[in-house]
Image 1 (cartoon, rainbow, N blue to C red):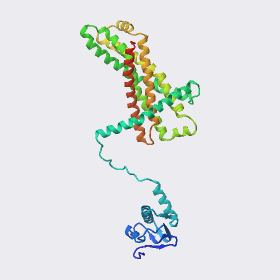
Image 2: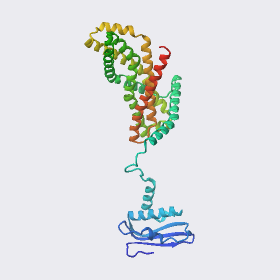
Image 3: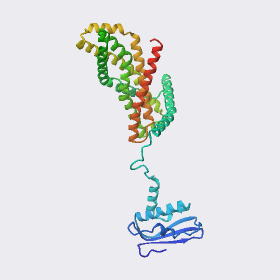
Image 4: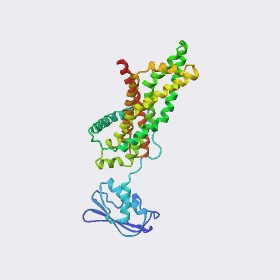
Length: 380
């Protein structure tokens, strides 16, 4: 069929091998009223005897995206009829554009999303996601344990300078925020205890409350929460960004274990620094209680100090530091786990950072409850 009223021409010819040859001529531009789908169908026989479609563009004098659109339309039609297409007769530029269009998938999730699913649906999907992630979490913990075993045998692959740098970041650099939070928590404990103990004229036991509470329980707990928000998020963001930049894949290609090179230094740094931060937090909280008692409840510094020494013993310090060590390990595992699991986009890095903080705090609360009950049963 010819279209003399337009700049383009389109004819068809059946070859001896059962193929349909589409001969193109003239100017194929997007503004030249290209053939419609109905006009294209008229070139195909009513039976299904066509085995292949070929192009002959020797007569084309000019083209732009109009020819690409037409060729794409032919390809889609042939695909729907399960007919092979030979694109060798098309101009080389058209073939390249068709390959590029086929290589880039259509964006299906643009614009507004559908309606938010019901609450029970979201809860079920979240439960399924947690169930699927639990084996992966256990696998990560197992790999970290194996990495610690390699460290004990002296075969772990990591640089000591990286360990020292992480120790600096999670330890001394965290002292200002730990000092502030611990001091304020000590002040709160002192005031809350004084309100109750004043009813019995026993304000001197504020020293017992603040000392035991900060050294044994609250110091480790608050330090763990601070480190989860500060260091755990940092670990997840760092490893997530490395995942986006394919640096972790590069380590695997070079035969370097990411668990040894990236996770192990962070795990060791927090395991070493958290007991010291916990001890420091407890001491700051005790001095905060001393400050409140001295200026508000007319309790002398020497009396407060003497009562604190009577209430505290080495066991309280060891329990608090042990809890701090456990919390530090949990924070490191949560941060590194979410960082390793991170996707390949900036949004995935943000989600991994948020998930690391939430996961670390959840682990800390569960561990705090379990350890408190265990030490109570052991009468420690």
